Image (cartoon, rainbow, N blue to C red; front, side, top):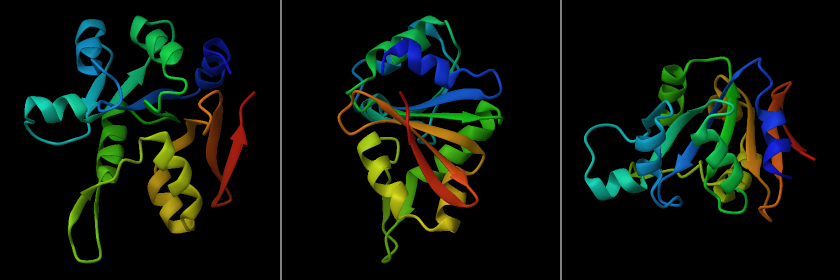
Length: 170
């Protein structure tokens, strides 16, 4: 799948388009965001040490035809940079949702970072969820878009009648 075909799938005009990007996988992500100024929020709360801020996940509002969006959509294939989502909700509402998913707790109560925004984790985790977990994970997301295991294509994930449906994109 090429960038132009993927853009047609993403930008339907009916929803906002977001990416959850992994600073640990994208060299210079914060610099790019500073230079190109897309709407974005760090998903880690509070003041962060510089090294943590560099490797943190970021929610970014994607706008068709802007330099940042064009860069991400051209360069992300095969690099597990993050996941994409369509939603009718604002970026501030989506920040609350995606931030709530980042921290999980073990049975013993230990707090861990859940790297759901890594496509390799996303593809393995989502099919293991029950209906309630899927509803929580999706929240107000209409569709998630995630690169395929070989990194050459994309798959769309959505809920249909409380069941997960994965559709490979051509």
